[in-house]
Figure 1: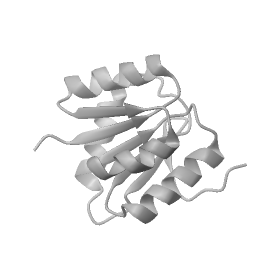
Figure 2: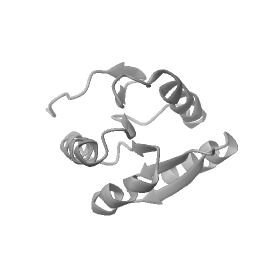
Figure 3: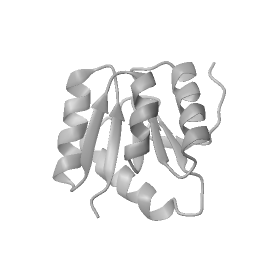
Figure 4: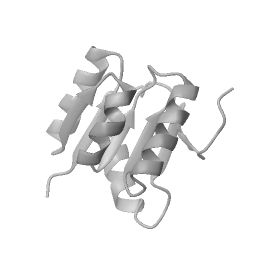
Length: 121
């Protein structure tokens, strides 16, 4: 079954680029710039990717709300832009492959994974 990934970003160009590389890797995508609609749309996905166009506080609140509503949903949070957008499918595939039975939330900051929850500074 083809997995669906919700892309949440305020930057339409970045969002379109991420959708393109994920489609090329065999994923379906949905896109929104609204955190409110993203919480609702998350019900139809296997993963959400929230981009760095949102503040840390917005990202943390989104992850808390979505995790409370859909605890089995994978969430990938980008605290900074990926230097190479083509790396996103590898992060997604790795997360789907190793995330079973472990945390469903990953945060990427400066190309490193960090623990979540981490309080916004």
